[in-house]
Length: 116
Length: 256
Image (tube, rainbow over all chains, first blue to last red; front, side, top):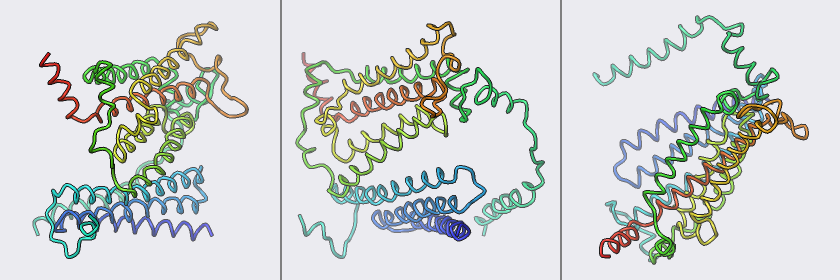
């Protein structure tokens, strides 16, 4: 059981590294603000939340580690906070950018415009 | 191709360090004299702080006066910023009047997420500060984390939401003063029972009700937590006053 948790955690940390790389590439290469925001969120959810949960699982699975429950609990709580905060933050950025109209864009369909 | 060369050199260096040099480093098997000294003055010994977290026990125990002066530098900085933004009573009341553009705030998603996260931040910051003698962290770090909560509320709602619920600049300053007073009193307590300033161990109990509290460390951490959190909150509240309002005050003073 503990070995499964250990390897699950290790895989999740690796996924986190890959997501961070893709997020950084997207932030450099994507054409405009809103799509770059998507890349940034890939970096925070895939690159911070997933590896944080991974660290938690890895700590639970590592029998040689002292205070493993403290480490696991801290990383799970931090992961949940980032999981809640990151989408809200990118939503706030997109909302503010749309509201102040400082970002140029040519949308195919604009749901926010219809509501107003 | 030319751009790849630095990347390849960097990768070779990292992997070389990781695979060839690190295993060859000699393994430390016995305690160095410095480490022994730290252990004696933090966890073992009659006059140590009885705290497994060495950094905190050094900072608040036998390097206590250092930390006291560092704390006072931080509070002088806070007082400096309060002086820069000084307002008289009438202007302060006027700065609390909600401006029209702050009526709506951000969207429902942001507001509800903020509500959940603020509670979590309060819990996490209290745990950082009150476990300061057990795990990395301490009063200053916990207080800085605590100050994120009002900052988030200012960003998602407005500073007027904080003030309507009773946390205005004056209250924050009162909390800050309580924290400072607490630190000073805890530092002076050993003098009453014949110790020296900021002495910890034989005077304060190391354990309260079976829980390790490391003598005076937990009191220092708690009061520092209160003082730093409230000090930052006061500055954030002042910084959140819209520029327009400040300019109005300045123009009025120039006319008089």
